[in-house]
Image (tube, rainbow, N blue to C red; front, side, top):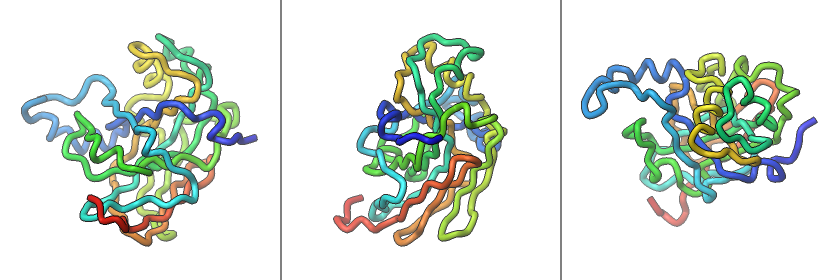
Length: 223
């Protein structure tokens, strides 16, 4: 049985960059360069601010003069507060799972995800529903597919996570409390594509349905 998202997923939305092995491998050479000289050793986090919230079936505005890229992701909805939980206990704090399309402008730095790229109005579609945790046999064996106008343009699996969901919850809750209703975006895989006004964009995840949005032009002409 699924549940209405707005009743249970109304907290802070946290994103994790670089949580797919393929994406991390693509970037290793870049990470070896100054000033960082190594890949990140802790999760690279960002927050999708409240203005980014969007829904299944809603429009996503394509900022004028910019490139827009969808980001298919598995969303984990926290069901009870988690503070300094162990990885072994972490999944007991999960209410369920949903689909997230984490829209973004192309990023210059994976170390410091840019607010300007990540936090435009409507840049975080979540839905269509919450599937309870006990209805998902293994969240680390789910196929993600991104469709643009009915064609598969990106595909991956949560088996390719760098950090598992329990690891992510344990590492985040080590320094901050995750509250019931918070949503954790577990990462987007390599191979992001550009979309344009008029495109119909869908994310499909095994057992969670499809999340659909239509890309529309920025009629106000704001960059």
